[in-house]
Image 1 (cartoon, protein in one colour):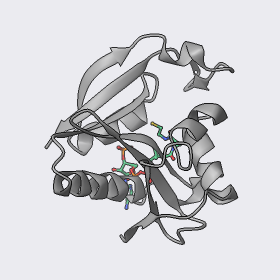
Image 2 (image 1 turned 90 degrees about the vertical axis):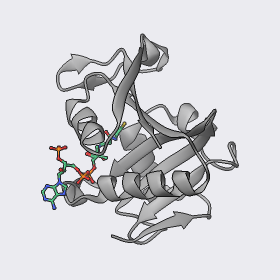
Image 3 (image 1 turned 135 degrees about the vertical axis):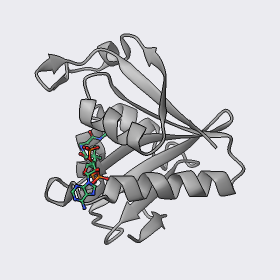
Image 4 (image 1 turned 90 degrees about the horizontal axis):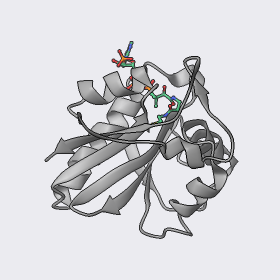
Length: 153
Ligand SMILES: CC(C)(COP(=O)(O)OP(=O)(O)OC[C@H]1O[C@@H](n2cnc3c(N)ncnc32)[C@H](O)[C@@H]1OP(=O)(O)O)[C@@H](O)C(=O)NCCC(=O)NCCS
């Protein structure tokens, strides 16, 4: 599956994916270009209207996948896995020691996917989603905490 890096401005199709993964618009603005110029965008499909995309930001010792989403009709075909594997290889090439990814503790499918790809649970950010302007319900549960998963490279 071909993953490419997107250097252009964020368009509507990107925003639909970004807000699907993270509904707090201001937070997403703060970790994407131009507000965060060092953030990198990786896409699958037409880079201006991708099937799947993720946002990667530098953190101490490596990189964090801050946002990842696949269009609903394109899910379960390995696109998120391909993006994550690509980012891991890319991060290794950058000399990173680790890659992190966080998700709601209620996101069982996401957690299982990340573990399948080699990430291990590394801590819980209690109350992380309490700062969100609107409550988030996932799998019938109010989302409160974020679990961080880490892959050592
Ligand atoms: C989470 C998300 C990004 C996964 O995207 P995806 O492209 O469907 O991911 P993949 O296809 O790589 O993997 C999903 C599942 O499909 C399975 N799969 C992968 N390729 C497959 C194929 N060819 N046939 C059948 N199943 C397949 C994977 O094994 C995985 O299974 P699991 O649920 O048992 O772990 C997507 O569901 C999404 O966009 N959700 C909304 C946004 C979101 O929650 N983002 C994450 C926030 S942290």
